[in-house]
Image (cartoon, rainbow, N blue to C red; front, side, top):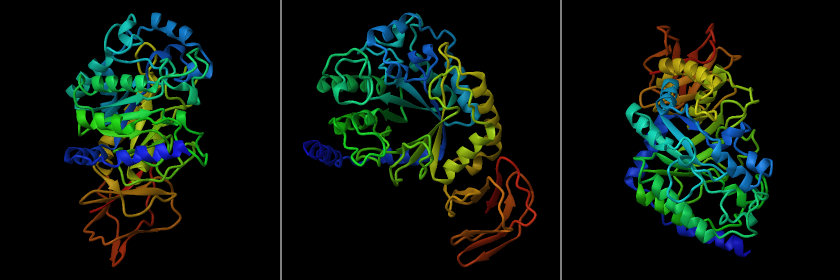
Length: 433
């Protein structure tokens, strides 16, 4: 009962958060971007078994930390990473600064368990921030509040990282100070940051789908979120806790699913009015996994991007670079082909919101101030397409062509004649002006 009361109190405190005008403007601008690239990378890539190896194989902290002697991503090139994202059509990057193994991917002053203490010695975040600014890509930062490495993280109440050889009990006030110190570095030394993407809250709760998801730990989010908004008022806070947004958060995320879906078994939350983002992998893994060849096709990626936009959501598409710092060719090739499509049809995605027709089994709609875009992703059985709403249409045509389609404007919508329309893969787009 006490834990429940504490949780209510935490959220009552956070209710005092009022977004600044800069933050509200940033939320709208963020929704306009529509497409980002997630980069899961770190010392775990040495083992080539994704990001959870330390936990999954119960590797002791003292043994896992030996990786610092062999990690040397000498082929890392920030310009290549950013240009890969840009050519794909992504407008922002979210970079893993610290994953659950606690390894810091920047030159932090608050931990020796960091990339600048490897043979690599360089600060990849600094180089990435510089290159993002140069190429006009916005930068967001992932930060795990779960830590399998630090002794002061309260792992005794957590669900993961129980066999890493740490003391019986952590010290959250000490750990909270560490988190604040690192966040201050990230939001002070690397320029403008579009968002802080938290992960790991779920470690202190019952599994997804449980009736009681109350946190066993008072995370002090009012203090953490307050610090972020103080350092960079425009910076948006998100938390991958798989629940409806907490007070003080600026966007809502969905893992391996689009809003309203739950094929992953993680997303039981209701869709909020906040900006939305769906994070999805290019294969089945977040980090580099040498035997994961289940790559999504170009058409699958395009469908996911379009489907997300039709649900009023951004798509954050993940790559997991190899230990040497390179993004594997299968990902680069797919992103290159996606970029060709986006270059031609991006107007139907960028700057749009979900359209007047709810997502259908054949496709979705998007819209901006002057156009409605009907995305037909699969064959339909009827030759008439009705789009509801007070629509004063002047022209209906196929995007990328000069082909016009007959239509009738009604009081409650517009009826488009699609008889004989050839549905081309991956997406046939009808523009209503």
